[in-house]
Length: 146
Image (cartoon, rainbow, N blue to C red):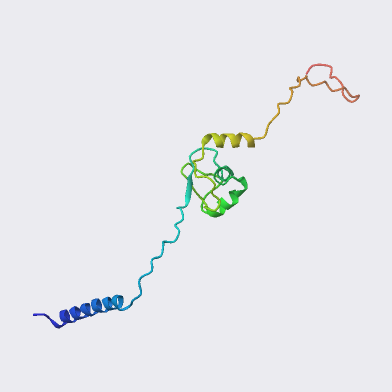
């Protein structure tokens, strides 16, 4: 025998199914098809692989402008920019991204080579021995045993 609670659940379930079916059948409105909103590409993330990678170098490669390093810093507030270890992930905002080609070690070397100051070697002057000081009248030689 069916208990009262089971019967109540069965009646409520039938009512819900019947009510939902009536709503979809009752209206003459056809569901309008809408295209999905444009899907933006996933965020671009650069992973530090080489020594000498800095935010200005990464910025210059991916955005085309070395001055965008501040925007990269703002987009990555939890990163220690002074000591970016291998494996550090840098988010590059889509509005700044110009290329998704991986950063090359040759590019890093070329940028770091250009940024090093050129030190000219000075001509070495021969070192001459110090000149003896001229004796003053107060200076005198001691005579006798020491």
